[in-house]
Length: 446
Ligand SMILES: *Cc1c(COP(=O)(O)O)cnc(C)c1O
Image (cartoon, rainbow, N blue to C red; front, side, top):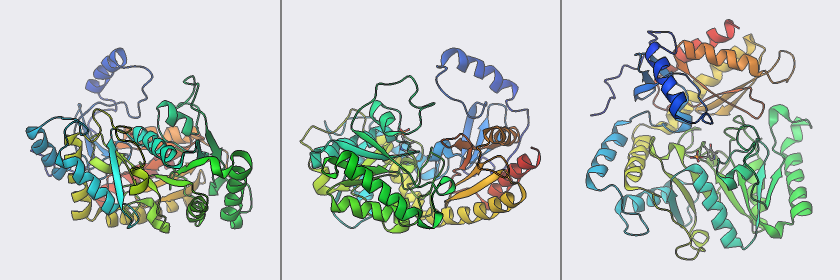
């Protein structure tokens, strides 16, 4: 049974947040689960469907985070649930590199068809975004026989040792966890809101800086890959200026450097395209996907040019659980839902609604310094009025207000002052507007 249609898609706050039952269970969480784990909203969830989370006290909370951009097709989407139930009744595990099964192959076929470019593509499936990024780097080094990897300011690529090194921000991701992998080189990121140069030449100036640094400080013949998020996620939904990604891709191609798009957060219909790269017709050599791929089950992938993906010796890639049959069945259900529910155009529509309303709020509340993003991947950056000084304090208050009124929102940003919106793409306009009303009331209450 799925809960779609059973759980009303309505916000309903029936206790203080957290309520008494959540408060009790959170004491057990503190006693049993590591203090190193963060906590966004202090409630314990019992059930969920589409864009509503129900906690143990019966509060119906609007989900504007999708479990960090995962449940793009909605929580417990019917086709995902159905596929998972059918799959788990057939088998639980064989290990694809020991004894293959159909679901893995079907997901690879779907990825070849759906990702940018019409060239022959192949994939590997793994468990998490970080594992996929690590594998993309392994494959790029194996293919090019070069050591260096170029990454950017504000980048986030994961929490494993290599991906921590690829990630920009120290606290909380890297602090006390070193030493880190070497041969990683960080480049300036054109961050339009905080660019100190001339805004009208940001693309050209940023490209010139990046190319100069690669040529002078590394040597392009030593660079295996340029790794970039087409819209940066944890860094604060930074959208590079038009032209930057195509020019970077063109430069890479000219130097035999692989262009790797980390679409873990921006992929699977999130931005109003199936993949964010498509906005400027960028065709990456390798594309890394995870989060939205399987409607909530753990799955991630590296998809790329067949000759690149095949350059690795047999047995060089793999992992016990990678592309588990249950996760593959979920992914096929999620992909089917993205198509049948027109979630690419829904994401565009969500983006239009959010952009309009957030821009109206910005005109009223000068602490909203910037409204940015694309499709259902929008953010606001909060500042001290009349300046660009980060205002993390106001962000904290607005987030808390929203939580207490039954709206879950996530934060982000190098400076800890960005509110990001990642609603499930199936959210109704009514529910979205209700959540935005709460947000606006939060600004009014400051
Ligand atoms: C979340 C994320 C990752 C890491 O994915 P995990 O599944 O958490 O390991 C990598 N890159 C980007 C852009 C992400 O948003």
